Length: 138
Image 1 (spheres, one colour):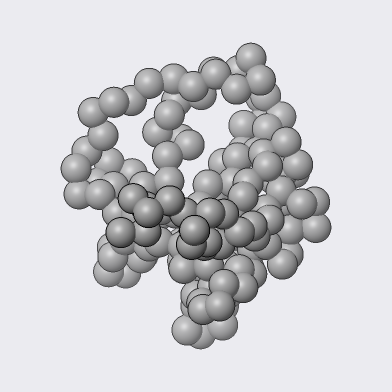
Image 2: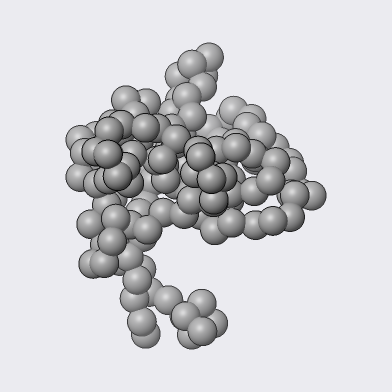
């Protein structure tokens, strides 16, 4: 069975420091400057509930979501749109600031060496190897 690498997120370990956003934006900035809008990861902080949620950009979809619903985590309710990884027309989160080209996590190159994982001292982000079934790799 084939394997691939992906970033695993443990929101229970995320402190909301946003160092991952900074490291990602530096990697993807041609000028070597911090620009959070270039980051392929966003940390959404719920100060009221004292939780931080790192979201890594996924594939682009040109369709607006029609299945929004609420998710319950640790007894707290969240809108699914907040936790969605897609770059889509209804959210401005994962698009290039000047061109509006959709951004997708590229794991910082080949072989995967994501800067966000390197700077996450709390272990909320980890690069893991996962098995793919034949349907996913086709």
